[in-house]
Image (spheres, rainbow, N blue to C red):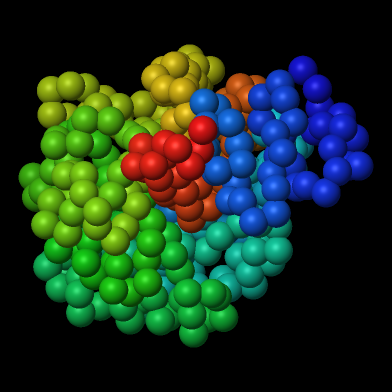
Length: 352
């Protein structure tokens, strides 16, 4: 298979843009969208990393950001997809992280990363942001405080967030309209195929009605129903420190992909299954979520866990259909492909 540089050499004498996709250099002419210019039979699976950037769960501090973040970014530098792109991450910040550690995340924007919002109820301290009682009690008041949380992100010097991940993957149908009204275009909160609860039995979200992890546009009245709502939902399909695999019984089986090589392989099997499900021309989005504190042990940073995460990403990127993308970029490509396909169905003569 030719390299990206070989593809560039083949096209550099022509007045076209190009994108290397499969075994051919597909020409991307001026005025065409990327989705229209590529082979419509070529399948893509965007791999999106979503970090829930929050204070450390054990003390409300920021040791994981201060210690793990720089090392984690370095660990990703040697990983590339077939287009030569390094992993792109949506760093979804809580209000306290945005206020207390803005410099660490602002520096990542120039490298193609994205700043999103992680909707812990705003507390006065990192410890309060983790209060289960406080967060759960305010789920029904989401419309009153979430827009202000987004303003806190902007006031800290970040661009308006476009990607959202909720506290503990909690979701209520009414949140969809609130998110869209606050400028969010991509949600990454749905754990498909089951319902999950707080330890005391309080319901966080019921997503049994969603059977797979593929992207969709939820309606504003049912977050599991596919429609033409204002958001793109990218369900959770994997994790580093933890993942809840749907068990087809309305619940989840927990495992930790970076805890052992065996569990790492279990996560890779799930991504391989998704790749195997792609139909010709499909654009899919596979979300992997994580927390920075998952890589921090009492003795310091766990190099073994970092190495497993890097190995997992490197293995996933071996398939030429996999592309590292931010959620907003992936959602844009997914919507563009659907738009082109719909135009071809409605007027096939224009694309013969």
